[in-house]
Length: 172
Image (cartoon, one colour):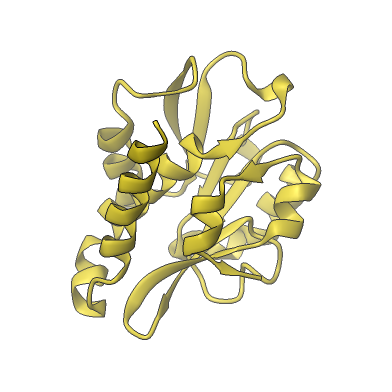
């Protein structure tokens, strides 16, 4: 099991090092793989470990299609993963993860307010949102995909990420 985790993160590390142009073309695939791994290697409180494992994607991003392909027939623990598409923060329900693509960043503060103190992981794709309180924020640094990890936000929401996720992250 530990070896599988290590191999998964080595593969992810290799994907991160893709050149910027290649990364731009494949970002939905890469982000989907990362999101699935974040789901697997994040510890949620016991109260969030029943029912389906829900990932909400805000807007009409192609990321939702790719994420559905990546997580099809997969689970987090014993929870079936379900991807829900929402068009506004008002449609948010109880979810484990909320993904706000860069095209929907104008809704960041509304989403963040709705998730405050709840065991949910907010994932964004715009520079600066990690510092503003996103749990995980995808960024391009030196023409390579990477992600920022905001440990304070995760702790406020009762979430803990694995050491492997932290090692690959830009910790803020």
